[in-house]
Image (cartoon, rainbow over all chains, first blue to last red; front, side, top):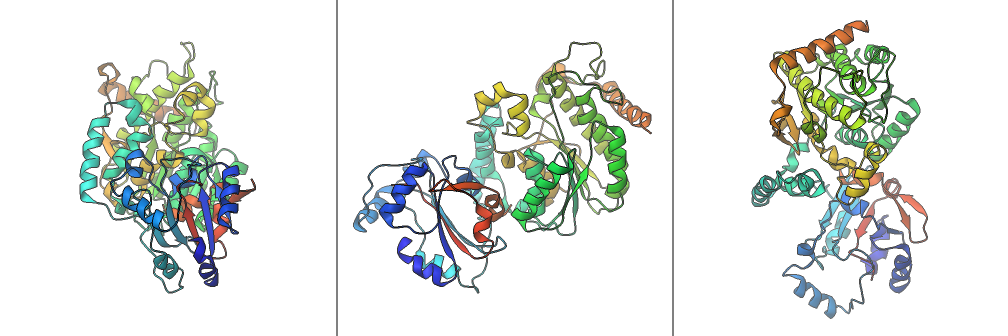
Length: 458
Length: 40
């Protein structure tokens, strides 16, 4: 590639090289090969992962490796030692201003390089854009479905990144090959973590996105990053504190004036100590349950104006451990435990999503809940530092955690389903432990509690 | 999500340790973005 830099530059483009070793190796690499263009280092493999490049021993040590190595030797290349991740494979992309993809090659094994004439041809202004995602291979999807069944019971594998990697083999890339132009989406807690990634993905698909955040400054900063990344100007911020019902009412009054296609209840927290809101509610209960319930109710007129509105509740796998608790949801009679409060309210979100789906069955508004698995989010880092230290090597990225949120919000495949609980784009059972099952009376009481709390706020 | 969008927000250091946001690379011109397996 470096031999043809002049040809690349003649076409008004630049060659940019990304390597995964440390900076000192990059400097030596640059000097040895006489590279004078941008050379970047990515020791954490963030860009490699974002680009969808392959990594693994099977991929590197493929049967075709010997042939590739022989070709490299004939071309005068001598491997002198690996400076970087030995199991990471590479790739080549041609990206035009505006982010249009004109060429993609993701190596299948070591030594699998693209034809350079094809790369140069992609730089021609008349060259067509290429598909963002390669078409799904039916055999690979079938294998992916089989592997998913195997990893499902193994929670550390299933909830962490390997679970998604295996299940994503069965994903159909065309599910998210959709144009959301003309759709309006509201994402709560969208200034970081899963909410940010969901907002980013929806904006990238063409939707107008409203980042509903507590902090205007942090929301505006996130909105600006999304505008930069997607080139979309239809990204705005609405201030809302889900734990404060007056704030929910004020924000809803501003949001309800236009039709709404997608509402994503993502805002969440895990306080160490019991905090009572000015409405007299425990903070987690208010933020995860009562506030979102009120927001849903107040935004119904806007959702009803959409031909296929969707409401997505971002719950947590931690909810599997807890039963719906209506005896003391505000933690007035118990010693406070933030992790249990979190899990109980996440259980309540799943039940509430089912109840909303029942209420809205005739309206065409689809309501589903999901859990993202174990993802590396600012919330996990700050609230569960021990868990983060233990699992950080296998945590999903925020974008990976948000995948099913985006799929539920945007995919035509999710258009007809309501009242279900999803994980990795598949509906899941909501109970694994028999003592976590709630009764019909519990469900009725949850609805009444939410309605009463919202009425108190009027 | 488009590959370019996923990459655009990522900031990497160049070989001298200067941070660079990937999205700025294709703001004005096309780029050939090559991910190599490793240095050396």
